[in-house]
Image (cartoon, rainbow, N blue to C red; front, side, top):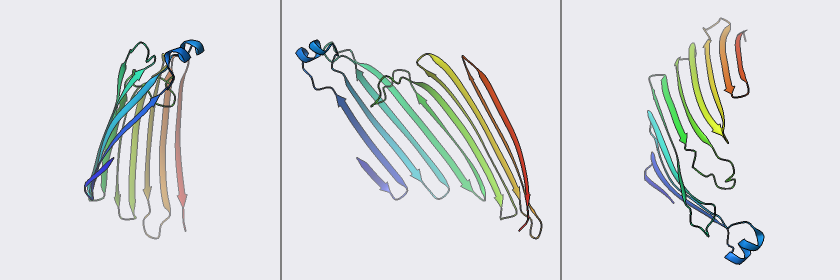
Amino acid sequence: MSLRATPADSLRLNAVDERDRVDRSIAQASGSPPAARSVLGASYKHDGEYLRIGGEYAHSFDDPDRLTRGLVHGNAYGGEAELEALGVTLGGDASRTEPKFVQLGNAALGSDQLGWSAHGGFGIGRVLAANGRHAEERSILNGSPDRTRDTDAKATASPNGLPRESYRFYETRQSSGLFDRRERRHTADVSHS
């Protein structure tokens, strides 16, 4: 269900239910207990002229064996914000998926995830522009920890009648229980048309 209070605001409510429709005798004969999984969620988004914000929340109910009635609850949530005015943009987001949150379609894929990012940029007409973004994510998938950090920044100068210059810096760092990897790039470009 989706509600729109104003042209810039929207609220969405979701509900999904996934159940095995078998009785006790069939479950015992197959050796596979009937499962039930449900997710309830809500999201809000404001898309204004200068400000954009949004958030979402989901709550999962997992009953891996409906015959014994053992419910497990989990949450996932996130938010984002961006402000744009006078040629400057600043924003960021954050999200969290708790370990007991069950994703429908693949309940075996458990996840414990936390992530955030921040970005910003500015522009002075077509003469000068710069932007950057940094993001971090930590996840534990089936007991194995993993952390990723990405940084990306770019600056461009295009003075009238002169060549266009641009510079980009990019770095990614990944670490897990098995390896650590770091990649760094510097790129410069000059072009004239």
